[in-house]
Structures are given as structure tokens and as C-alpha cells.
Amino acid sequence: MQDDVENLNTTPEDFSGFNLDERLTQALEQLSLSQPTEIQGEAIPEVLSGKDVIASAQTGSGKTLAFLLPVMHLMLKNPSPTTGCRALILAPTRELADQIGQQIKAFSNHAHLKYVLLTGGADFKYQASKLRKNPEFIVATPGRLTDHLRRNSTDLKDLEFLVLDEADRMLELGFKDDLTAIAEQANPKRQSLLFSATMRNPQVLAIAKYLLNDPIRVGTETAAEHNTNIFHKYVLCDDDKFKQKLLKLILQDHESSQVIIFANTKAKTNQLRGILEYFGLKAGCLHGDMTQDQRQQILKAFRFRKFQFLVATDVAARGLDIPEIQLVVHYEMARKPEDYIHRSGRTARAGRSGSSIAFICADDWNNKARCEGALGARMEQITVPGLTAKYKGPDKVKSSGKIAGKKKSKEDTNKKDDKPKVKVRTRDQLNKGRPKRFGKAPKNNQDKNEIVSTGKKTTTTPIDDGFAPFKKPK
Image 1 (tube, rainbow, N blue to C red):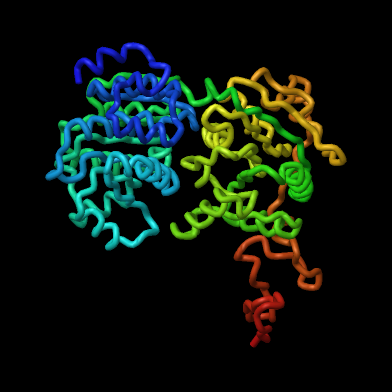
Image 2: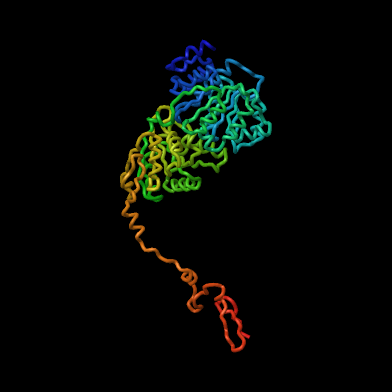
């Protein structure tokens, strides 16, 4: 093994340079995979050497195989059939976890390594029965795995490898406590690997410091640095009706392609799917309210081109690997630059090229500028023949691309101060909306009674204000 590691000082031109197990090499040949990607070339030698690794890689760069291949190689070189789970892979979404499971399955005919998928939306008892067979791999979302650990469905005492895929997204979704709890139950002598699209999030660095032991850093600093195969464009829009007409024209030009249309809410995805069906464009819908079986059926139908267009929320922004997707449409602009980058990353997979088109209304301009800052480049403005928006963009912009507001001059400030102040009187407020026949409202409680003089005797009688019954004086 030491000789294998010494020969990996440089990135090989093909997978044979890693000296992987023959069974893995045969599987790679059957999958028509010969040349490693950049992140694979950097990460695989470090993982094979037994070091903890922090890797930053753009979406679609082949990072899944960057940790699967060396982990499987080490398992095959050092078999341990009597132990429990040997490798745990954590992912933020069901879709990404299922994608990783499919990658393991692709090698199972040769490597004979079993895995179990633990995600929400599936039967708990069925998953527990699979765990009792001691699979080498557990691929899970943090929440569901935590539930199994609490019920003693499995343990992590024999764990050799802990992999956190898309760690930044897991922390954004609030899984920090679950990750900490899982790590505390795992074998402390494990090898830990953390893969993240960006290292700018301080929580990622904090969790890496807690989970990893003297890690090696590989890959690019941000996901956007090498995302050069995606052509980022935008179209100015007026309102939702304009967007619907624009979407129809764009999709009609891409009827032979597979396209994902992103929206921010579940309600909007359902609405858009109905609109596309009305336009005669067959489309599917994917969002968080769907069961796991429904999600898998939709994705399977999309992969096999039973429909060309998929309307989705950000649940499809990560873990969806369909190389044929040529266009991503942001019907509603992503709320965060990171989400925009991952949405756009559904196209231009594995070295291919693709386009990302954002629909920009007046309220979306500054959000677009923030995304451009994360990309490190300006988006290209395009127009669709026969449809032009009244909105032409802001009159002035800052160097950051955001809208430049008008600065207040001293004259404007003085003019504002010179305006006469309007005195607000209590009696005016009391009489607002009061019918004239009732007269003016009393100023205070003492005026609510009227003094009625009757010679020797003086009595007080309540005035008829229209709301209480009138009482005659005695």
C-alpha cells in the first residue's frame, strides 16, 4: 500500500495511475470512465494515504467518485466481514443521498459492497431490517440517521470512514447538532472526509475543526471559480404575466432539450406546472411536500424523457445529476448566491456546456448583482424576439452592480426642515367621525355632566350622547 501512495505524487492521466483494485478498474471501464477530473486527481491520493481531507469542489465536478473510489479500494484491500457499518456518508437532501447510493450500486456487481439508504419519507422498519444485514455503506441524511441511533437500530463503533458531502448545505439546513451527535457516537479512530462547495461559511470551518484530525485541503476555494462551462444570462421582466409569456417562448425553442425551471415556493411550482400544461408543454413538478416515492418517480420519468421540463424548488438544486440538462431557468431568482450557483450547476455536468437564464424584475436587480459578485463575472443580458419589457434596468448602478440611490443634499435636508409643522389638537382627534347632531365631544371627565340649576336645589344629569339612554332630571 505504501508503494501505491508513493506513486501518486502527481495527478495521473487516467484512473490506472491510482493503482486501484482490479474490480474497481473493471467497473470504471464498464462505465466508460477513464480520465479523472481535477478534484478526483487531487483528493484520491490523499484519501488513499489515510489522511483526513477537506475538499472544495464545484457542483458537477465528479466529487462523489473522489471519495467513493479510494474508500472502496481501502475496504477491498482490508476486508472485514464480521464488523458493522464501515463507511458512513451524510448528505443534506434525499436526492443527493439517493444519487450517492446509485453510484455505489454501479460498482456493486464487481466490488460486492452493500449499502443502505436512510432518508426521510421511507418506512422506518424496512430501513431497520436492512441495517441488521450489516451493509458496508450507510448513506443517510442526518435527521433520519439520528432517529435510528436513538432507537438503537445501528451503531457506529466499527466505523472506518465518515464522509460529509455538501457540508455547507447541511449546516444551512440546521443539522449542526445532528452532525455533532453522530460524530460523538462514531469510532474516534475513523478517517474523516469533508466535501463542501465553499469554505467561506465560518460554520464549515468550525465543524471541520471539530470532526477532522489535521486535515489536508484540496480543491478550489469556491464553487464558482472554475464554473466556466455555464453561460450565465438574464432577461428583464415586468411582472408574472410577462414571465409566463417569456417562459413559453424560451421552452418552445428548447423542446428537444431537458430543462429545469426553478421557483422559490411549492405553490409556485404547482402553478407553473399547470401553466406549462396549458401551453401544451408536458412538465413534471418536484418540491418538499412530495413523498420519497413520488420524488423518485418524477426524477425517473425525467431521466427517461417522459417529459422534457421539470419545475422544482431548491430540493433539486443539489444531488440531481442528469448530464443531458442543457438549460436552467430561474423563473424566480434564488434568495442566496450559493443557491443560484447550485441551481445553475444542474447543467454543464462533467465538462459539458450549458446555459442559465434568470428572469429579472425591478425587485430582483440587487439580488442579481450579489450573484454576479459570487460568480466573479457579469451575466449577459439577452432579449427574446417579439417580447420586450418596459423595465429597462436602473438608471445608475454602483461598482458592485447594485442600484445606486440618490444621495441627499443639504438643500434637500433644509427643505424638509422648512416645512411648517401641523399642530395636532386633542379636540380635533376627539371629534373625528362624530355626528354633528351629538355636538362636540367633552374635553375631560368633568364635562360629561351638565349642571342643571333649579333654584334652591342643584342636580346633575347625564347628557344624552346618543349611546346611553336619556335620563330625565328629578
